[in-house]
Length: 231
Ligand SMILES: Nc1ncnc2c1ncn2[C@@H]1O[C@H](COP(=O)(O)OP(=O)(O)OP(=O)(O)O)[C@@H](O)[C@H]1O
Ligand SMILES: [Mg+2]
Image 1 (cartoon, rainbow, N blue to C red):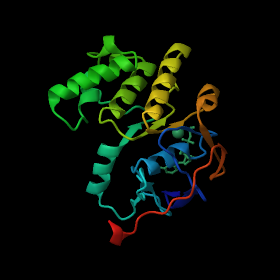
Image 2 (tube, helix red, strand yellow):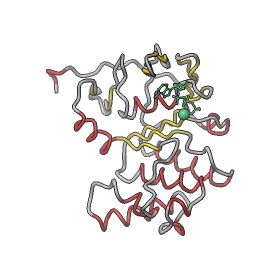
Image 3 (cartoon, helix red, strand yellow):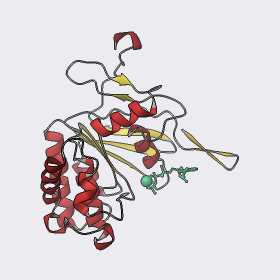
Image 4 (spheres, rainbow, N blue to C red):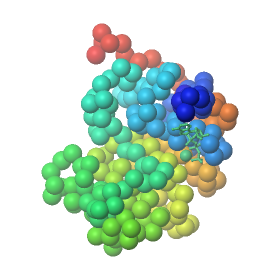
């Protein structure tokens, strides 16, 4: 993957082959600038890769779907229904309360959304902060609201960019417990992190270095996507 920058090419990723499985917490580590966020945005279907492909799904014996060539609308649907994404810079809407930020992407009814959002805010330790605007929350609190928002549609895949970057040990423990529960429920959890506690906690660790991945922990089996004619 390269970025085009004022007539220059900035090469970031090459030879990256990463499989994130349900039931596991996977950590993605690497130096600042090594391409972790770039890779996460590709996996989260936010940035199309200029080379290679992203496969989604493939649980219970079915083969995964190749997302290359899907329309923007189809990608947006996949993101809404299947992926929970926590941005490195949170991306909360500043004019809305914590509760509203969590409810807004909810795909079901409004009442149900509010109830779910309150439950999720409690789960990230923010029951008392539901009516605060983002500017009335600490950095770590905003980060936790962003996580609650990512979980509102019960996604089978959770991608989080340094979700413990701003947390004290107690909140970190709370979130690691939550990530473990999410994995135990069968979800795939991918955490970008600089934090050794998170890396030690993960089932699989992938390290990005000079654009390439090396891994430790249990390795993924190769998967073949279903073809166009099989869909
Ligand atoms: N839009 C862009 N145009 C050009 N270069 C970019 C762009 N976005 C990122 N880069 C470059 O790509 C490289 C990887 O950036 P990325 O944000 O993926 O790193 P990172 O591993 O997430 O770093 P950090 O740990 O600091 O968050 C960096 O060197 C960055 O300068
Ligand atoms: Mg980053």
